Length: 156
Length: 359
Image (cartoon, each protein chain N blue to C red):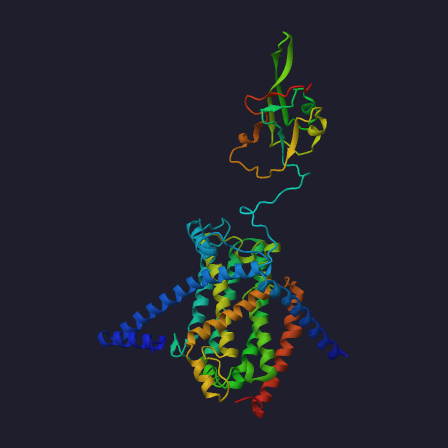
């Protein structure tokens, strides 16, 4: 019958609306269990596999493992890495190619991880940082090897 | 005991003692205007903050908590930002109507304040057709919205305004009919008479189920009339960017924003007056002692408490329900609310004639 259906519709509508309101009302009075992250106060710890930016690892003696082989530069699909090398005089009188500057363009990087895979000496790795915003684009071009750092003993 | 009635009385007497009646009237009008404008400003700040906090808590967030103590200065900062922004008028817009629309909307909101009784003897204009006046003037607001949508020369604005027109015109019917149930029971259109009739209990308790139904219809209809979600088709951020106020910026936008919140306040004030006894404290029939204890809380506290509870209810709707489609919106009004309201009106009339309600 029409009138029965009508009343049923009204009843079921009211019921479903009220159940929705019950849920939001519950949330309103139980606001301690907030699900949002209080970002600047509490910063998230990113997962190990998260790719934030490429960094070069240095040990406590300020030595890195980069030989300047340019494998990463060749592996990079969009010219993010530029390796500048120099000729260094060895104690035995021979000259040897060594890293002068590891230029990394964060603004071009797609975090594809190919450079890290290509590196034969594990000199670079992906960091878990994510706050990359700066006021000027030039600040995104980074020099990865620390000033005064040199190649670690025994890394060929 | 100091009350708002005494303060207004003594101001009136102090003015009439030294000035002629016309000047007294003008000065009193100016005072009333300043009071209304400052009430609007405070309401805007408080209600926007309340809305943001309520929405945050309902969505298990924290809401604004950076500016000032626990974020209390957030809306003041937002208003300051709007004040120093440029008020743009688009090139193709009808300049006169475009600038007139926000004013019209806010003026209508101010006009409705006139017959609202805040506490005993504290009312701007005691007219014997208060409820009729409110429902008549509140429908002028839609002209402001249509004006804004039309003058913006923007298809989204026009769509929003047209939707809003269809919506407000339809929902006014059921809002009016639900108001009428109380008018039938009281037998008067005057706001003061309606409040006085609730001396021994509010209508929501005295009027049995018909008044309860008409209260539900009233709340739904006024939510639609103030263009609030789930009936915010006129604005519909996700479909029409902002509907009728897409093209507005700076203080003109702020006026629309303010008018929305002031309108919520006003409809909740009307709802509180009709169904919850306005400033009348919570009285139960002939329990003299209980009633006397309740009288110690001033009327203004009761009134604002009721208003803010109703505002919370409307905010609760907004942050729970999804937006309706236009056809669903009109279905709800014409197929459900209006027939139920009419039947309910009939029921109330029978109830009033037979005297089957708590007198």
